[in-house]
Length: 339
Length: 295
Image (tube, rainbow over all chains, first blue to last red; front, side, top):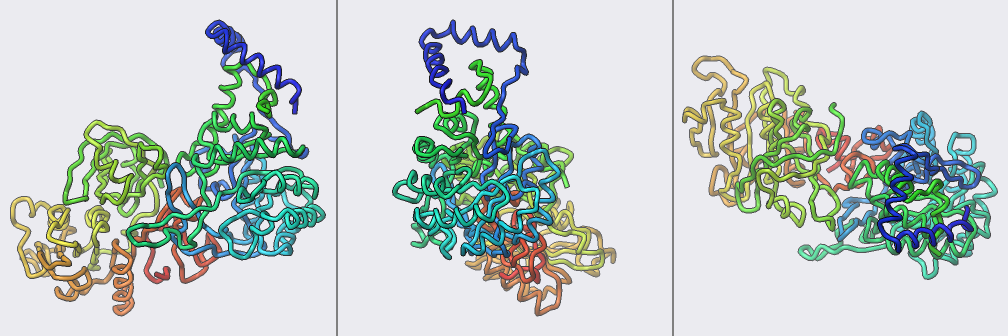
């Protein structure tokens, strides 16, 4: 990951800041010489899978790309991470399923999905038309459910699997896999034995020590981690004296959770060697860069897709601009540069 | 259907029609592809309120590029919108959802267009779009019957402006062009406007269903937008009469484009997209045939 070089680069950047305008001018000059489209390398590799850039979609916020394909060119994305899919269709929770809160939102969709058969036939077939990586998010209620879906995906064009053991909105206990290190170790190792594709374990932030969960997943053979899933929250309608969400609790996402997510990514990046995909309230390139500097190899845009349907491509363009502006040729120079 | 876009619209004007009810006219390219029953999502500028607010289209003038939104202040976001003034910019996502299926109301049919409360505004563009006889029944809380004159103009043509329309009846206002009118020709604008108020200050005391009964309306097809109890009553009425009814539903939304699955409604059959008994109000609706949805 070029971590060795990052310290130097940071020193360089600090020096640049100290000397002020001259340094900035020099960088601008360099960028100008290299031309508008100076090649900056943003490709990253996770578990042997190369991504053209580190920007993905967070599961559940982008469907399987069909809806947002009206707004953005899906070919530009590093990967589309699909809405969670189970071995059979799930109806999800009652409504209201969403509630706005200060700087974010709560959701309790309950992993409504059409089941793996329809997903493979329709959603995967759709995504295969694009030059983007496909990461399929898999959910389940029992280990057997997960294994069934994982096996059905074995012969498909899915590039990676992301295992959702952290959805706070499903009562049947999927979250239990993500909140106990021994259970996480068990399900991770069982999925790893069956999975044909590299496996990303998506971690819950609703734990006492997320590094313990990260270590358990790594020890069980997980190829990568993604974090964070939503934080469990509640919103009360004070006029009606009732919970706003039919499910009562929901998962908090959006910019409100970003500092927590950056902190957790940073902690885990220092605790495990496997790559991390960071997410939590990314709205713009500068947010994504925080995650990269904290140690994430890639990032995902989630709830902010709902706010700005062009967010993913704006983050991609913004990262490139940032790299050019700072005379950085390869994104690896900033990954994990803040220790 | 026109491609969905996020754009910046310019406020032409905003007026207050009744306490908490605002009439916002926007100049925007989105007007070009807008149809009755569709909606736009309006973004607050306050970044602590992230999600856009879905607001139905009250009127669309594609040629002038003007959208008219009539909305109720329901929270922080809409409270902010109520402060918009001419010349201000406002971000919109649109045009969203499927409109009312106007083609279902064939010439020769008589349609009843029912609006309740803040469900009244989208009925206006529908009234203008239908090419058959149509009666409008608008239900309000009290005598502040916003948009009533607009309906009279839309349903009665120019009559309302020169006083030829607007004959007061027990129910509210019935206007010309009723079957068997003097020239014997049913024009495209034939129909009447009825009002129901909860406090009985104007028209029928009660709700839109009370007004339908009191005026002996015998529609061949129903279109409705309003609160859920009203839509349930409309559905029952349609089933009793054996006529089709198209209901515009609402639910708390996040994305507005069908990705988040936040705004689903229960469906009677397995939905073609979800493969469960749920349809997305934003994308598969917001208008559904009453028999399709379990409300």
